[in-house]
Image 1 (spheres, each protein chain N blue to C red):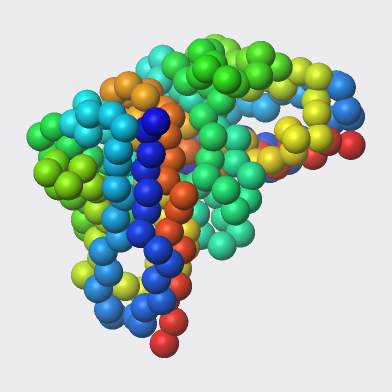
Image 2: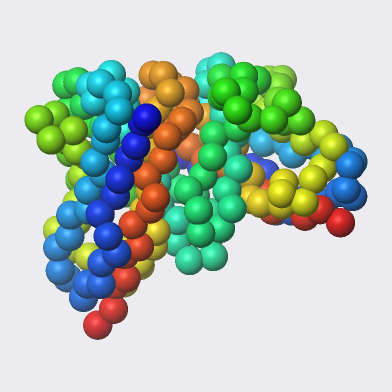
Length: 119
Length: 110
């Protein structure tokens, strides 16, 4: 069974750094792209960026680069989404997802990670 | 990259059919055959219901169908059921080698 398990909810202050993770299992980690998607409170889904774990190639939405960094560790079959300096506007639910095929949609999703940012 | 355009809300009676349009550009919907649709119940992870314009993943009801013409993709839900109440998002691969979501459509079953 394919599973993507994300790290738990976070409460941070503006200016702090954060890394959330997405642990994949049940498939060959390097065979599928992983994307990160944001949902701000009361808003729609926004694609942030993706990584190809086979070569760590990343591609970001212009709306999020260079504020976030996406990475992956093949040995841990884990993808990461990282901020060096959080802003209040980063408060959201973040989902990771595994693409069905290169170019295709996200077939498997993590459960989401709630990030709260407040002073 | 601007979001694909969807109506904010669509409603239909139980058992009826509704269609949700999704309009993009020549750099996304109009260029690639990689358009997909997601169903999203708030508080849960999104669910892929259509990929590659018109294909249904295993386990997805055949009441969901989709197509594309030019820069506009469309999702049709036939025989509306109460459990179809959710937000629906289209998404497309883009010529920037990334993805873009639609603005989202809230479906209400009357």
